Amino acid sequence: MTRPILVCAALAAVFASSAATATPGSWALPQIKAVTAKGLMGGTANGFRADDPLTQGELAELVQGLGGKPGPFPPDPAAPATLAQLDAQLVRGLGLIPVARQFTAAVRGAGLVPRSGFGTEVVARLLALRVNHPAAQDSLELRPTDPVTRAEAAYSAARVLAFTGGEADYVKNLAATFQLPPLAGLQRDVLQTAISLVGYPYVWAGTSERPQDPLATGSEVPGGFDCSGFVWRVYKLQTYPGAESLGSTIKGRSTYAMSAEAKPAQRIPLAELEPGDLLFFGTHGRRSKPAEMDHAGIYLGNGWFVQSSEQGVALSTLSSAWYAPRFAWARRPIAEAGLG
Image 1 (cartoon, rainbow, N blue to C red):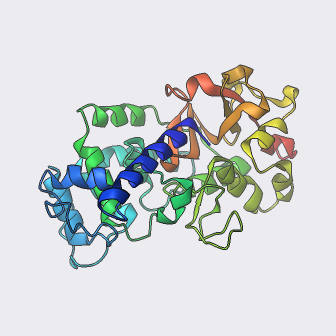
Image 2: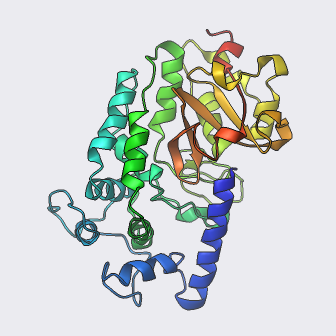
Image 3: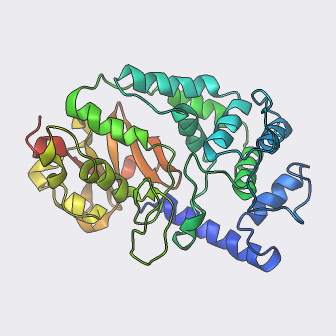
């Protein structure tokens, strides 16, 4: 679990607590108040219907109310909008569709096949339009194809309302650095699995994109991943033809265990990273011990990696202020398995 996850979870817990005293069930009460105060989504927090699905018509009106230009008005305004559609429409309204296409073109240029909506999900999560619910509320998490609630839409809209003016340029500048090397063979196969999961939520102990009961409590939670669960899904649970030994290279489920499995001589420094390497981050950076590792991701190339964190499965850059000083080392499962 990363520090941003902890911060996000703490804030969400505060929001949920304040909501419980005013409007039961409205975990997003502060955001609902912020949005309706601007005359959006009905213009009043009373009777907001936070848990109802957001309709296609309401989504179009919300994007227009935020000052953006939505796509063509939906043929069925009463149909529910999905989470992916919410993100895509907000990205469109912010004028960032060309940036989303840059991300999509870059992964295609590397030999990968992104799923529909990849680019807009990357941009939406770089803008922090999503919220990670506390572990006890993981049932609220949504996959890209799930109908989005009005509460989730209010959270995203409040985030847009809080922009200070530099957010679009920030993402544009990041997109300009997003170039991946040509990928082939097992590197490509592994990273194809990884990028296919972009947009899924952070779910504590999660290892699957399908509904799951990761802690065997008898209560199912949505598909999603924690940081090491994402690595586990890509390297341990996926079968790669001709590379059956790859799954056996990772034995421990936690970030601590995965990082400790790499002996000091196998630990790869920042300057020698290759696509597909597992990245580990710790409280003392390069001086961290395995027990101090609190995050993991999978390297894409050119300073970029894919991870599951507070924005769900998303792309990030090693140059960010949080990740740069905390990078400890990497390991190379493909080489460990004798596969290249």
